[in-house]
Length: 467
RNA sequence: GGUCGGGUGGCCGAGAGGCGAGGCUCAGGACUGCAAAUCCUGCUACACGGGUUCAAAUCCCGUCCCGACCUCCA
Image (tube, rainbow, N blue to C red; front, side, top):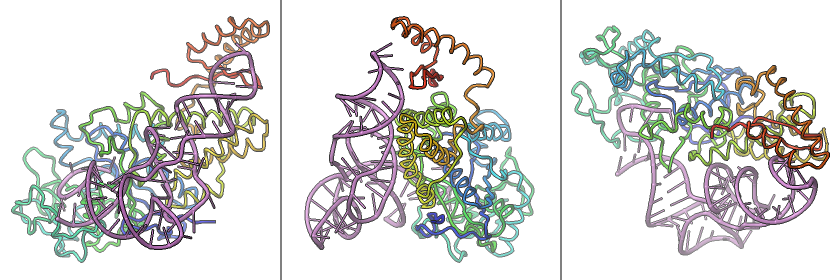
């Protein structure tokens, strides 16, 4: 039996996962800066790390999963001004939008979801330590900077050299000792929200909150720190810099998910609304969108297209259809199981695409078994497929996705359709195919699909009426 | 300038020296009153040019193209 191995951005190699605390896993994922509605790139990160979490949990680890919300930063203040809302109202509005999107895609809520503004105390403590250490300085204008030249090491994650970096636009910043120093804390400008500190009123810089909150909930050292590729520099480098300068070990390994791209390019907000999660959920169901986002390997770019999404949804419906049929035949829902091959695929740095090939194989065997009536094979296939879908967070029987139709309604509908099907059967019996097809077409127009099977006709609700 | 990813069949998407990943689409077949569903068969690809090797999508050298980050970013 293989054991879990994961790619580590720091070493750029796949290593066996060895938890700091036996039987446990601690994960910190950089969540959203809540300044706009989530697009599928944001949510892909959530889905990828949710798959990691589910697999680790299934593998027996007690997983503590922290995903933060950054609810104060430059962009939030800017957007709040644009939308003519208090900054906190804007942040909450989009925090809810993210929560809704996570829920729609069955991304499990984190163990805890700390907000930056709820951890000002911890940030001040961290800055105090850094200033006492001599690692940080407060030039007197309310800002606090980390002095990067004094660090023992810096930029190890992105493997860059300090002097090779292009200078930021604010390089002329007179209060910095070195233009590469970065702000832990920003002194308050007029009209901006602020919190009191020993160095003046101000607000958090972008990076400080993650170091403070990771320390607060996971301690000086934890197993995995995750986020999107674009966070490697500067965000994660600066988290490392702050945390190590404060004397923490910080993250043992780093995982980064790749982007969703369009036409080869990273998604940007200029693309408009079309790739927002809620927009896409008008076209496909949450479970289908999740299937699509989770289907590529987390370290590979996922090239978005509407056609690819549609195809992916079609493929998923085939799988779902088999599970429904298997449930009817078996008389009970499949019991999730994992084959050796599936386990090995997932243990190999979450080789989801390989796992999906196994699902496809099981599906083919299962469908053949439906034709031949081999219940044993139907059950095995269905169990393994459901087991895989469960880990991918795409189990169609998971109540998180909501039942497709309520029990009472289904019963009533079932009776109604049964009446129509009785009429159709009678028409077919007397070879009046015009009449029987008229019934089928009529039901079809109402969104009810009829299929004739050796066990008799079965009906289902066609899903994509909105398309 | 520095750092880092890519280019795989009609489309999506794995793999990383040798046994055709897989899916979707399309075409043909089986089944069917017809559909639908399902199964079977077919479509034998790895940017370009060299090289190494018994063997290269995979390694090496060179070239072209695309993208990302460099203190706003999933």
